[in-house]
Amino acid sequence: MTKAEVILEIAQKTGIDKADVAASLEGFFTVVKNSLARGENVYVRQFGSFVVKHRKEKVGRIISKNQSITIPSHNVPSFKPARVFVDKVKNASMNSVNHTE
Image (cartoon, rainbow, N blue to C red; front, side):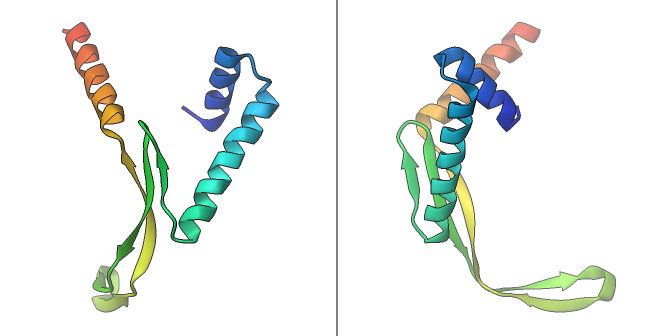
C-alpha cells in the first residue's frame, strides 16, 4: 500500500478532505523524523514505538577488493510494534491461511 492509497482510504473512511489527510500524515512523518533526529523516541499507544538504536563501531569487508574497513558507530531509526499490533497481524495471517486450504 502506498502513501497515496493510505491517504485515499483515510479520506474515504473519515469523510475528511484528501488534502487535509495528506497534510496531517506529512505532519506526523515530520514530527517522527525530527524527534528521532534529536534522539527522542516516539511512542504511539497500541500501535508501536519509533526508536533510535545505536550501532557500535565494527569492522566490515569490501569483498571485491579483499579489504577491511571500519564502520563508525552510528544511530539508526527502528520501529517496534505494540503487542496488540503484532497479535492483529498474527491473527489476520492465521485466518487467511485457514481460508486458502
